[in-house]
Image 1 (cartoon, rainbow, N blue to C red):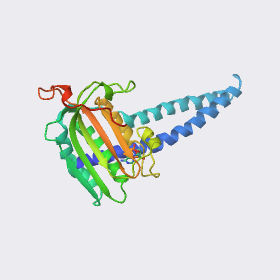
Image 2: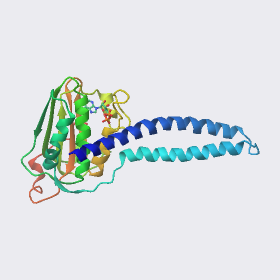
Image 3: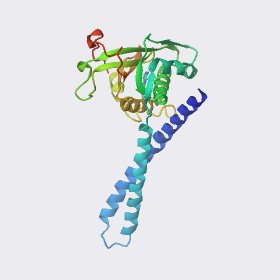
Length: 261
Ligand code: ADP
C-alpha cells in the first residue's frame, strides 16, 4: 500500500512537472521560434549575424522536441497486462482510496458476485481509480457520498459511435459515482484533454483524466461519463472481459444501450 501510494504520488509529481513546466515552456518556445523566424527572414544570407539567429532556431527546435517528449511521457505508459479479477483489484486498493478522502464522505464498495476477469495491468487500473477518486473527493468539499460499483455488461453495436470504434462483447465495469458539484456540458466535453482543469493553480494539473483515458484505451476499454450540475458525477470504466465458458453465453441476456458520455 505504501509502495502504491508512493508510486501514485510520483506519477502525480511527474504530472505536475510535465503539466507546469512543459506547458508554460511550450508557450515561451512559441515566442522564441516565432520572433526568431521573423528575424531570420529579415536578415539577408550574407548578414554576419544570420549565423547566430540560425543557431538560436536550431536550439529552439531541439527544445521543442524535448517538450513534446515530456508531454508524451505524461500520457503514455508501458503496460504489463495479466488476467486479473476487477473485484480483487478494487478490494485491494480500498484502504488506500479511503485514505485519500475525508471522513465526511460516505465511501461504499458494491462488488458484484461474479468474477470479472480482464487482461489488465493492475498497477495501471489502480492509477485510474486513484485519479477518479481524487476527482470525486475534490468535487465534494463539503462531504457527500462516493460509491464504487463493479459489474458486467454486454455492449452491442449501438454503444459504439462511428468515431469511437470498439468490439461488441461482454465488458467488466467499474463505476465511480459521487454526489458532488457535477459538471456542465462545456466542461464535460473537455475533461479528457491534457491540461484541462477547473481547479486552482497548484491544485490541478489537468492530467489525471487524460492519463486515465490513455490507460483505458491501451486496455481496449472505454470510459463513459454522466454528470449533472449540483447533483453529481458517475464515471464508468469498461474493460473487455476475458472470454470463458461462463461469459461466452448469449448476448441477449443483458442488453445495454450506449450511455451518456
Ligand atoms: P485535475 O484533477 O488536475 O483538474 P483531471 O484531468 O483529473 O485534472 O480533471 C479535469 C477536470 O475535470 C477537473 O478540473 C474538473 O473540472 C473535472 N472533473 C473531473 N472529475 C470530476 C468530478 N467527479 N466531478 C466534477 N468535475 C470533475
